[in-house]
Image (cartoon, rainbow over all chains, first blue to last red; front, side):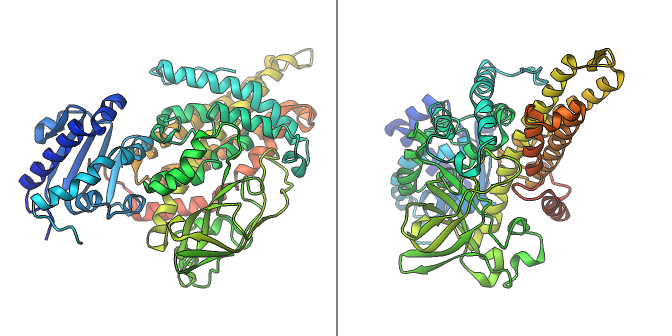
Length: 133
Length: 417
């Protein structure tokens, strides 16, 4: 069974997480400084989201944007990623994560996301998601 | 010499980067490469060699971190910008281009891990280095294994009979490494760090391999003599030996469970670089030939005035343009998607190296006897180009590997995101 029971849970959780990261950590200023944007495509549940320094967008609003980097993965892989339970080069090599955009930008994204790793466990508790996989 | 670019949309930044790389290749790289070419392999890396001031200058300008992301201190270039810069460096010297690129390989791999310890320990000092004192190498080739270590589609690749020359076993929280790498490791005798391919599970042949980052000042590491060879003599190469060298478990960045796809990913990037520098070399051969035909008089008129010479020069020019088109397209694809479509990198490498070799060969023919002498650059270009047909996987093996990929993936569907 998928970790995220439906699209709404995922959109709600990541809507809050990205907003907090952008407004309350150095992630937001760094996104703005680098003019960085990311488009996430997840399967199971099917969700699309666009994130830049202005905050997250979902669905059609997200699809209307042009990102610097696009990343595609399953909802379960997203969850493991934020729990730091995934080896990124391994996931890229095994096609668990697919990326489009300059490879240098993809690599640069990883350290930018650090503030989110610290915040994510709290959201797992709030949304009753398992942290031991 | 500058060239007309078929891409009319190059930005000011793109053009500035190309111009700076052109100046470095023309004023620094090529003169040093010609000096090094005339020296013995040991003299090339001896104290007082022009190699060392060259490296310092290259590092000061950041040419050792062309492939690294800006966020870690790299140049943060786009795939197109990498292509523009690497063509110029390949024009300046193929061998020195290889040396500067492999210098970053261990650190590039460390970037991929997003592991704070590896980044702080290895990547940041490398990116901060401006004196050439931190140098990586890509230690994959072995005395008993050349291109077969990348022949993923071959039956032997996964056979337990394929015993690697470099093995590692886990002892508690440390890997213990023993064995050796062959004399073909670029930068092997002067590198401070290696991106080391080694066998962890011999029962799976090379599919049981892994990759670690190894500082080469660890106890138990020793080096062979610099290799003497016919071409790319400015590129240091030599053996590295490992006698029960210990590293922390966390420095093993790839293990057998995903070694094969990661190898493909590395191969895709390395072959793109090869294709890119080959275009530079092919262009260099063309420009040397063009200049020569304008100066050399035969039968009472400049060579260029002879009808057949114009035709021959046009073939050289055509190969440069064709090579640039495929090299740039493949780089634009495979440095913009993960995982890459490896077959396009293989097309670029095999075609561009063949075209560079053909250009160097025909340039010598245009020069006549003069082309066989060390007085003219084309003689060096020919020797340098010959090595590229074997380097980073000989073209026959790469072609077979490409065919293997096609048998499993052709036709590829459009990217679905």
